[in-house]
Image 1 (tube, one colour):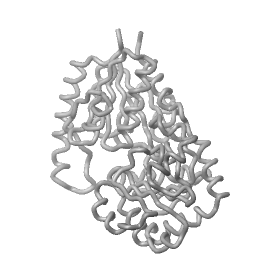
Image 2: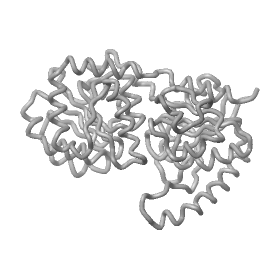
Image 3: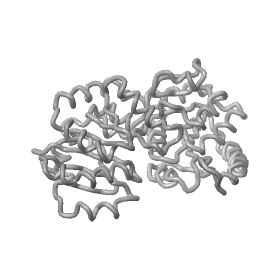
Image 4: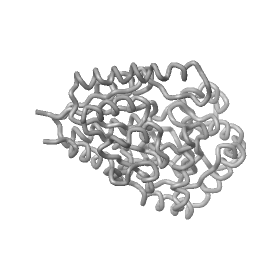
Length: 364
C-alpha cells in the first residue's frame, strides 16, 4: 500500500515550485505515494498546484502585517480556524509524513502533525530562516537547508544540508542557445542582458531600465526583460518599436532565458539563487527591501562573500545598475569568474535528496 504525504506552504513561486519539485521526486522514487498539498486560500498555490496535477486544500490564513491593520486583528481568529481545519484534513487524509516548505499554511498544518506524532520535515530555502519555520523547528523531525550556519535558527542535530529543489528543465542548457535566440526573436551576434523581476515584477528593476534606455540603445546589447504582470501595461509602451528589447509579463521558458543570458539582473529570492547556482551565469543581484527580515540581502551576501555574484542595493539601482551591467557585459573574464564561482554552490540533486529524507522518516 502506498504512503500518504502532505506538503504544505506557499504564498510565492519561491515556495510553490520547490514544493512541486519535491512531490515529483517523491513519486519518482515511490510511484504509489499519494500526495496532498495544503496552501493558503487566495494565494497562487491554489492555482499553480492543480495545474501541476496535484490536489490542494486551502486554509484561511495569512501573515502578520508590519503595521496595525484590520488583517492583524483577524490573525488570532485565522490561526484558530486554520488549526481546526488542519486537524480535519489530517484526520481525513491520514498522512504518514508532513512536509513544510515555508509560508503561512505550513504553520498550522505541521503544528497539528507534530501534536499527532506524525513525522515532519521543514524545508528552509533562505539563509535567514522564516518566522514560520523557526516556530516549527522544535517539533520537526528533520530540517533541510540550503545555506551554512543555519544552526543560528535551528537545532543543529536536525539540520541536513540539501540545497533547494529547482525545476528540471534548467539542469541541462547545453545546445539550447540557438533555440533560445529563435524562441525570443533575438540576435545571436549581440550581447544579451536578461532582467528577471519575478512573476509579479520588481518596480526598481523596471524603472532602472527606463531611466537608462539611452545607454542601452547606444550599445551592441539586447535585453530580454521580464517586467511582471503588475507592471507590463505601464512599461511596455515605453519600449514600443525597440527591436533589441523584448519585454513580457512572464517568461515561461526559463531554461531558454538562462541559456541565452550573458548577464542576469534579478532579485535575490531563494529559488532564483538556487537556479543561478545551477546554470552558472554571471549575475547582479538587487535584493528586495520589502521582504521579511531582509532575507534577500542575506541570500545575496552569501554569494558575494565567495565571489559568486555582484550586489547592487535597491536604493542605488536606478543610478548604478545598468552601468554595472554594461561593464560586466564587456568583461568576459569577470563573467567567467562569477559563473564558475556560483556553479560550485549548486546542488542539482536537492529534490531527490529531500524526497529520500521524507520517505526515510516514515516507519515501515
